[in-house]
Length: 426
Image 1 (cartoon, rainbow, N blue to C red):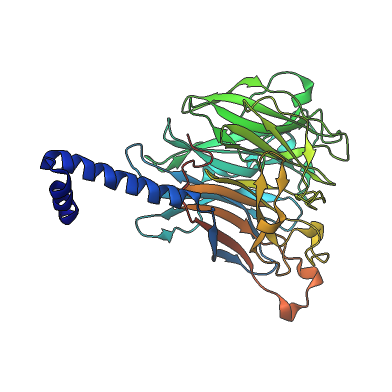
Image 2: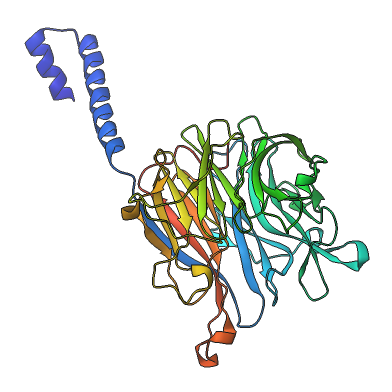
């Protein structure tokens, strides 16, 4: 730099102060040029996978692992990741109370799962057990608390779900305060009296905290479990202790099999995207305000062929430079897997055409004989997003000498470029 400055002084006879400014501007434009070139590079990512937990054959299976990042209001980096998860008991869709475990960025260690009594089963009418399942936790930055949202379920003595009372399936939530390390007990979100909300669940759903602190919760709802479900996004307020219904968006309907359910919501580049489960196909819709959504479109690849994801969840991973879908599907030499729920795929989507870009598809968790259909996806910091999933094996169809443990996997997606928008956090 000093040699360049002296040369300019000799040639142009300029004062050193002027040349100092000019050289600074030159450096600035050089930086802008190199930064611009860096920004033009395509977004890529690498994948790493680790096992967090294992459960022995024919014991409980850890299921629905999902995470929320806890960030101190003054901190520039997250301090802790909280995971919620439950034991799947030896009956279909029969869940224990909720457990949680935490990862510390300071020690880079996970704690063991603990089951707070506040999050366990409770007793309902007729001595029925009530659990809350299908939980997704999200960090509320304004209130500095984690909100865990799931669905309340009544169980028979045999572990079967009951729809025996009006509003037996409703959305429930619990709040974790990192300052005290304590959870509240489960509370039920009170919905309007309309009978279309007699069965109303925000369950297995990605949901959002808006910049003003309000919540956008995608619901599937109906008069009972015997009618096709519809999907609506509900805006709620949160004062640090209680969630209150504020308003509802339009209703998306599909009178095919069980209708539309288990929706997940994300915001990308100012638009809202909703992915929805159906027994025969998966669907997508978009909105400009997060409340009023366009008619649904079946998920397809960009060549027009059906995605092949059906009767299971899909979730989003959002980067400021790209939107990605995580899903399972047919057509992957996986006909031996129930509902084709393995392997777990990730692919970039075209946010305009609402298609999955086939060439971008990657397997992030391979198929190893176990179901992978119930998982979580979340942004962690500017460099990383996580997918968390628990295996479920059917030991009745596997020779005993081939039995393996069921694992809970953590998949780390490490981005090639900084993520300027972290999904789910204002």
